[in-house]
Length: 290
Image (cartoon, rainbow, N blue to C red; front, side, top):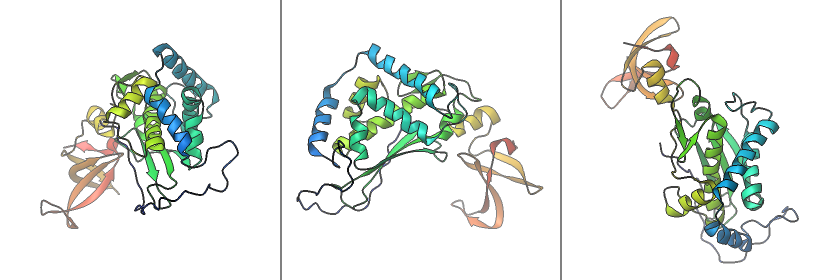
């Protein structure tokens, strides 16, 4: 599946072309928001720098091992808990090794946060860029988000080889690293060039030279695949389930964290087939195929 970037922003205001005043509260030693000199130096470096595979793999392994030691939640390669602090810690480790801490320093001057989402059921991660001042040339706020749902569904109850960004992953922590690397490259592009797309040459060049990525997609275990493999349930199947003690019959319309089942109901919502249904959101394990 395609690993996508999501960007949101307010409607831009035309740039006045006037110099922007330095933002109050910028810490000593930290660059000003969107400092042209800082971003220009980063652009020149990111465009050409290459790491030997041995050095790259050594740093990635160091990050893997340090996450196991320093995290309060990640207690093993196939951890059962993870926190937003773990995402921030992992990205910081990458920045310290590959960029001497300069990417997050520049991003923090504008605003950056890290999150986990249980609602992302098809993409492994996303970078959201917002423009709170309403200007495309103004200060930005970055949000780097990883999908906890896909992480926990992978290396769980469906067994097959897992690849992220063209890299074979042996456990959940390695998969988390590859997704974090992918989103970190999105952050780098947006920070420096205010634009980016993982299907284009510049992104893929950076991801390959820094992290050895050979693809921009992942094949993590989605809930739809899990439904088919574990429960033999697919979109369009007729199913039976119990709700408040009543036996219900319907058809699977969608599969995300739960299955959306449409049950015929004369008083329900009218759908495109001209019939009326009530929606039920049912855990997969409660469905029986008719």
